[in-house]
Amino acid sequence: MRIEARLPEGARTIVRALDLDVAAGETVGIVGESGSGKSLTAKALVGLLPPGVHASGSVHVNGRETLGLPERSLRRIRGREISLLLQDPFTMLNPLLRVGVQVVETAAERTREEAVRRLAEVGIRDPAVAGRYPFQLSGGMLQRVALAAALASDPDILIADEPTTALDVTTQREILALLARIQEARGMGLVLITHDLRVAFSICRRIYVLYAGSVLEVASGSELEAEPLHPYSLGLLLSEPSVERKLGELAVVEGSVPFPDAVSGCCPFVPRCAWAAPACMEGDPPLREVGSGRFSACVRLDDIRPELEERHRAVEEAVPPDEPRAGGEGAALVTATDLRKRFARRRGQDEVAALKGVSIEVGAGESVGLVGESGSGKTTLARCIVGLETPTDGRVLIDGIEASDYSRLRSEQRRAIRRRVQMVFQDPYSSLNPVMTVGATLREALSVGPDSRTTEADLLARVGLPTHYAARKPVALSGGERQRVAVARALALQPRLLVCDEPVSALDVSVQAQILNLFAALRAELGLAYLFITHDLAVVRQVAERVYVLYDGEVVESGPVNRVLDAPSHPYTARLVASVPRTDPDWLEA
Image (cartoon, rainbow, N blue to C red):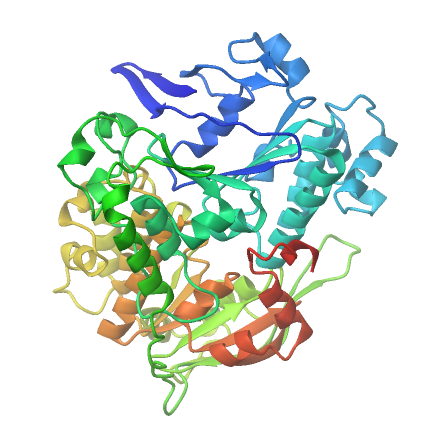
């Protein structure tokens, strides 16, 4: 299959060539960075490409050609024989309709009883949920509803496009286990699209590595994890932060995914490959069999295979660095004591307690992790510290200044605290003004900073971006580049503490590694302290010395990262650790 976009200036290739087969009851993974063509491949398989995007070649579902069928014919197939589950359930669900109505929209029986039965199949056993609207449900619950809707017509094949990317580890494990159980019970084929190799290894029988619209490697999950046979696959694998041990520096794949047309006639990975040679420039490399059921598109594999293996082994066997300084000598930089935060609900309903007496502290130069599921209170705590929320009770001290209620501070105190503490948000695009250039955004921040000599060029250089990016707007940047700009803006005020709220959760693994290395470099250079909020235990292992575990608005465990993750003392922490994806075949059943 080939996918192209029809633009005024001509056709643009999105997927150059993809040959994929899925047997009944088989799970096949498609992995790769953003821009590789994964999501449009999913939409092409179910006939849902956006206007102006065209697929050619052949798609057979149950032996019948579906590519090119009229929409009326596709509707009879879509949902019943092949179905699509998207990453963001809000894009699948109508916010104006009750979820029960949407679940059975394509089912043969469209009754409330059928909706309740289908919801129970995905673990939602409260019949009242069928009568609720999407905005009344949590992210994990919404993904279950979207899954119930995708399965309502009992499809033979389900294509799941990043179904767990935005979920915390425990909910992710529940959704994956649910998919596996339903697949086994129905003998359903499953195509799992993800950029998380750990997820792919845990559930997929075969994995296709997609890059710039081309398949570069095909292997089983266990084979790919043990010995990647393409430099790109190796780069992805080494970029994954380890949940088991801290690494001195994460390996990165420098650069970004090019448009397929920009690398036509050569190996698409050439611009980013450390092993590139003239032979790699001599035509599109074929995907050739290099073992039983294993395929690679590296024309130099026979020459460089020992080097790939050595590089893989060197990183896997690297000695963990000495424990970095814990910081916090003397008075704490930030202290939160017995923080409580209650949010009012609708009239007649009880208040919601988001924080129930949380106490934490962060020392100067210290990196502290804050982990827990969605709804545990992590973001509420962060917003109370930076003044975006006012705690109902409790006390916040920042560098000795009482900061429990920013509205009661004198203007000079508020300015002083803003300079000491800055926040980096999860989604850099929504935190940047889309109509302002990068340079204007940084100049605006510098105008209230303490050093009039610092320029936007200085800030860009500090976060590893070229100075000409100052003329660009956020829409012209990749996700990783936007997050670097967000960090640069925070640095404009020369803070002592950065509060980072899931700053890498939405990024590809290779870009995530680059940003995590950036945080480490900035800390070494500037002596920054971090309060690093994440649901990814592998990330917290790499960035923090101490960690607090939040559950239902309370700290249930805290201490050095190594002790907490290696020997958790609270059952909830143990459940978080056990939920990290593993290749153990019993992981989903444990």
